[in-house]
Length: 288
Image (cartoon, rainbow, N blue to C red; front, side, top):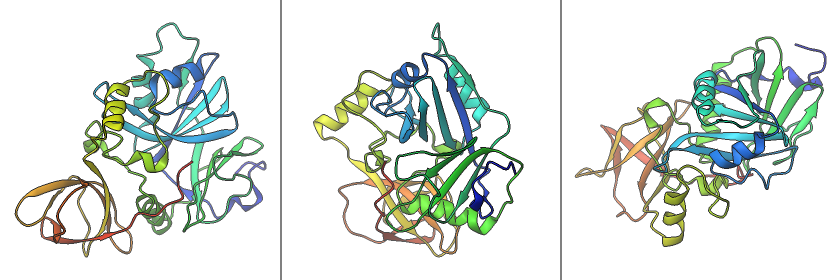
């Protein structure tokens, strides 16, 4: 590891399912404001927010952390998505803007289940060429590191705990089959403050605003645990009919899943296939 990493970098473990996309140039902020669901203009440099990229029909392509390092440099920290593929998709909308989109070579992403060294809430921590984010919530301190460094050690148990904490806090982790399927409200992204209904136009904005102002969000995220690994994409049933879908799963000590379900539903035992589901409350504190 480079010498300019934080002294406590040793506990960090690799997060290989996280990728970084960079937006560089005078039009970086304007481009992000026009494409993404949250208000990037209102975000102060040196801070980060949860954000999302939507289809024109208001379906979520990706949920990510947007880091505004400066007005002309923005990083997207995207889980479960190939950085090169996402960059190519975004490139189609650059047109004549003064902007370069890239997947920076050599940047690694790591996590640690401890307090950050210098980051706090939405304020980014900097030390040399390393970037630190506070990924903690009201129940678990977490530090995320983005830095040019050699490969971090991979620890499957720590990685599973990291994903488990994401789901406990209602951060949806969307594999390929669950992208472009759900609106921000169906994924309860308001819990993360990940979209705006007051900023200007962006893809899907009309759908998001109409749902918000007419009060027609009929589905949202529910967290379940099960006695066996829960398959992503599985249907949730009340024994008589299908009422929802498992969109994110984590196979930790106790299998977890986030499901999109009707907000107004009768109280009844639920199952995914032959696996009984037990609802548990979502945790607060991950909003930025």
